[in-house]
Amino acid sequence: MSAREETGPVNDLNTVVPLVLTPLDWIALALAVAGALDWGLVALLGRDPIQAMLAGQPAALRALRGLAGLAGLYCIGLAVRSGRRRRQ
Image (cartoon, helix red, strand yellow):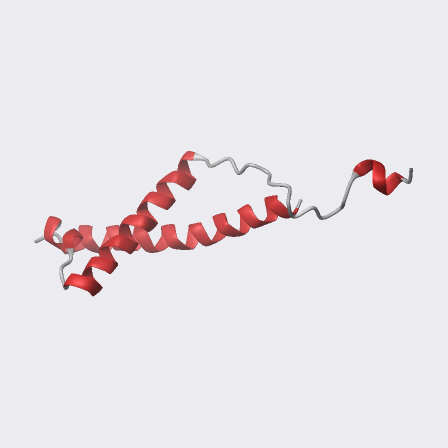
């Protein structure tokens, strides 16, 4: 038996390594999903529930949308991190 056979395949794509999500990961995912649902409702129904909830508070609306955008960028990194864990 060779050394390679003892250690198994180098890139076994069928092996799934569990991804442990941190609290920051969960917060980012929740914000990204909320932002996506908000924009989906804007596109489908022409209604913006976040703007309706924060009526008269443009700074809060802008901050919340900025956080949702940052969360989306963070989730890109989360997806890359997830892909790397699968290939190891």
